[in-house]
Image (tube, rainbow, N blue to C red; front, side):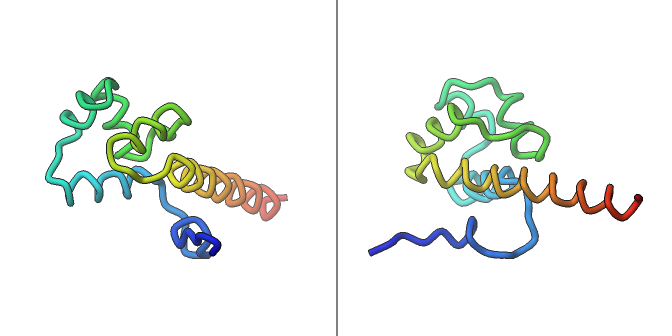
Amino acid sequence: MAETFPYIESDAPVSHPGGLLAEELEVREMSQRELARRIGRPFQVINEIVRGRKAITAETALQLEAEFGTRAYIWLGLQAKYDLGVARRKMEESRAAS
């Protein structure tokens, strides 16, 4: 049976995966500082991801997988979808301005 990934495969408006990370923390009643401590990352990195200012890297995705059980490729897929959406919007704006 093939796995499906609704967050990745949908055509819904693209949002930064930091929002999903924030939701995950809220559900688990875990602070950003606690997550940073548990996965050995600086608080600033987690905070910037949650605020949508920093990308989820492969290393961070693996650490999130180890902590939450959500596969690293899902985190990376969400980040890639966001990055593609941003690039697409910029390209469309550039074409419209031409």
